[in-house]
Image (cartoon, rainbow over all chains, first blue to last red; front, side, top):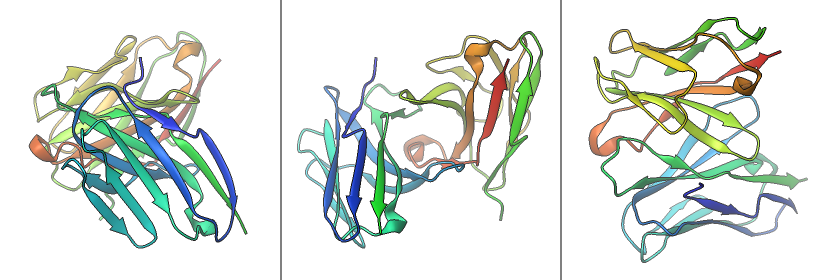
Length: 112
Length: 114
């Protein structure tokens, strides 16, 4: 059972386009994170959101945590080839467990 | 500052063989984790160690054992490898407690069991 569903699974766009990827769940999370993973490497933390409705910006990337803390979105403005990678969301459920649950990821390809 | 290191980077085993994957971190983190990553399944937690001297099962612990050797090192052992254990294995660490969600990952070990 996947706690976190990500969509789309695959996305291929031209350089300069905008895009949004989604991370949804029926569970409530204390916090939610986004990671980016490049081929042959481990995931790298991009951002953590903890408050319902919170919006964080990281250069051209905008992250939003849903008001009910069950979902999140990542918006990229003017995508660059360097944005290519696997984007993973991960949630810290309100169970007291000391671990994260990861979504299956969105594989983004930005074509020059 | 190396962060999280893993050895080996690649390994091929025959069914029934055993091996230990090594992980070390130099960030003085309290918590360490072992995940496996399979296509279409995302990252799944195998075992974790919230602090030195403790270990707990994650989502998919069957067929694995772990040892938290000291604060820096956390190893994963496959006693009798099976083809279903073909995967990419990642070790991660975090400061623990309320910062458990800020995890730092190693580069991974690609394991093939034939």
